[in-house]
Image 1: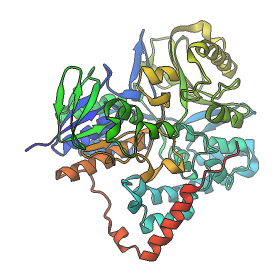
Image 2 (image 1 turned 180 degrees about the vertical axis):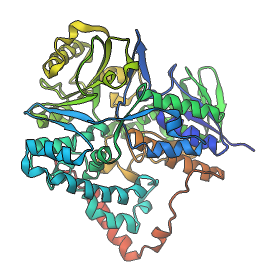
Image 3 (image 1 turned 135 degrees about the vertical axis):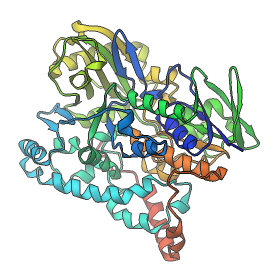
Image 4 (image 1 turned 90 degrees about the vertical axis):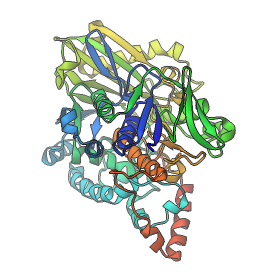
Length: 532
């Protein structure tokens, strides 16, 4: 008898899960609240312009390639990707810039122009993080469902390399003395919505991935990725139902058995939640059924920053890079204002995507589609966005003009703005925290919501709110982990690679277990050192 699964949410994690399950012969129905697929990786189309709603960097395509292969196709057959060089420009408010490139010799030359003593550190950084990624991959590809998953010799051997007591910035001091150079290799912590002064050092692999495997632009934007995933899913028989917000997950005792929308009741053998984790728990699951993740506990968790977004259709074009990151002159203060003070910065950092320099399909001829993002606090009583929206918009236009785009406001023919309040209310993101639960030591691995949800049976999680965390490649990995668990639980044969064997755990001696548990407990008590 064919097994049936419901996936809540047609974001990248939900679509990847649907592909993997359908390829294994499971009947899958996706229920999406919005009228479009993609979630935060959807697009805004208006007046001939096209903007990615959320992610604009596409990294490490290997994981998605393997998912497509399971469906009998390939990434290159479904999406046209262009590797960017330079990958992006970093403009430092304190002076200087880097046009970051995978060309090692050229990157060394540019680093030397900022700080001659730091140039040799680039190759050492790449070599060490290449080894680190190889060691970490099995952990990123495996579920962490409890303490027992920490107790294996692989993780024990990795502890000295991972340096969990250090922040990314502290770790990078081993390679680079100049603060600007370090920022070039740790601003990527913002992909997780975190400060590099607080983000655990293991995430130094994020910048390594860019140099080793490339930064890509999908023609049509990152939303072309989720559009292709939807096509592949539908070819496998997946039913995608748009404008179908799930009101409630149905339970028989503590087992999920289906969902209810305003118009239908759907029964299933398993339910996969790809909606924002905290908001989904609040809205769809009775509080009394949750033990580890009650509303009270959710409110006490740490959440990522949010983003202030401007999508601008502009007359003319710009001879500027595809991606430019503008770092505030006092970056430490900027981050403190976001994460601790929860106030708006007078000198904010911001990012501009000028994608039409690579992909003219995104705007009418003679015009450009500019995407502007500034990291800001998640929803907090200190900031009233109904009052602050216009002043912050004005400030960003001033900053963009100073960054080389001229008096851009006069050239705008289309404009849309999204604030943290919009992310919260319109896109159903808890506190508007666009990168979900923060990736702190006490909210990682088995301390994050589990892929096989620990509070209830028959429920599985995918997306940034579960292990391994946020970012497109990592979300795709969460889909692989959750799909394998679900298929194993249903007894379905699969072409998804099986979970790593547990022989390592069984072979671990009692002394090793005891030592590791002691070390792990100590590490989880540590707070990543901050220079704030």
